[in-house]
Length: 71
Image 1: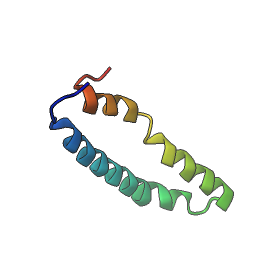
Image 2 (image 1 turned 90 degrees about the vertical axis):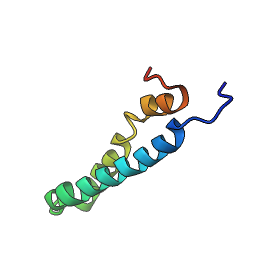
Image 3 (image 1 turned 135 degrees about the horizontal axis):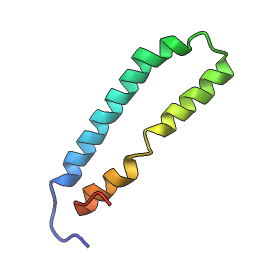
Image 4 (image 1 turned 60 degrees about the vertical axis):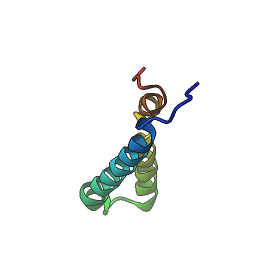
């Protein structure tokens, strides 16, 4: 149990927000024009998948924010 504040949590939250903005910008800039001609149902599935993919590395990052270790 942590008893003192740590710099990792505010840094981690800011890094997470910045990373999410970069990821969303990359999807909007590079993938949206590519998928524009797809049927709406397929686009919906693709955007749902892209919305979940960014969560994959999040577990290790949250562990680092809390403990200072990556595992």
